[in-house]
Length: 215
Image (cartoon, rainbow, N blue to C red):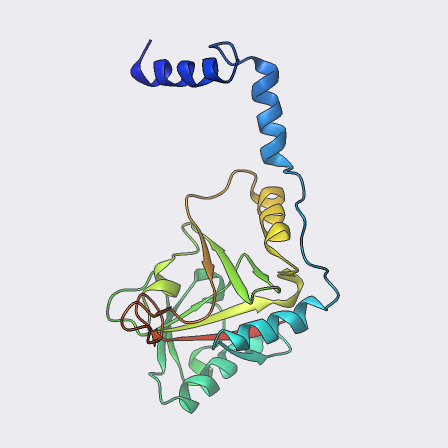
């Protein structure tokens, strides 16, 4: 018996269980993970898209609406010009085919480097209750595009805005089965108040988070 097995066996003995885990016990744990019991939560008497917008604005994000994916480049260009930001960016591969050049932007589909200032991503889903984006790691969703750049522009499908964290995790389990190596939650610009309780934006990530809502 390894040291690990010995420790676990002692824990199980204190719990009044046999040293070896039975198949039925393992399956009960699997069922619990796949479908965890619902806990008490506040009443949901609001519309998810409207609530997401309000929550995101309260986190110092900015929000824009467009009518189609084709309108994304022009919306990004308007935002960058309005804030005197560079007209160059990196993006997730899913947006590589958009007409960035026609909007006056130089956009490359790749992971971000230390010199990249603007990143354009999608989101696995968005959480209305808190104005939060959920992203998952993968070869086509490099986390550096949202975490390393100073300005993060996120394209959010209204159809992927769920009421709360419970629905977000449920969607992940239903669509991906096993969670990816990293699941990130982004709630507005990075901030900290560690120094003299003064809120500072951009301490550990983007200074700005701009959300573009698409149908």
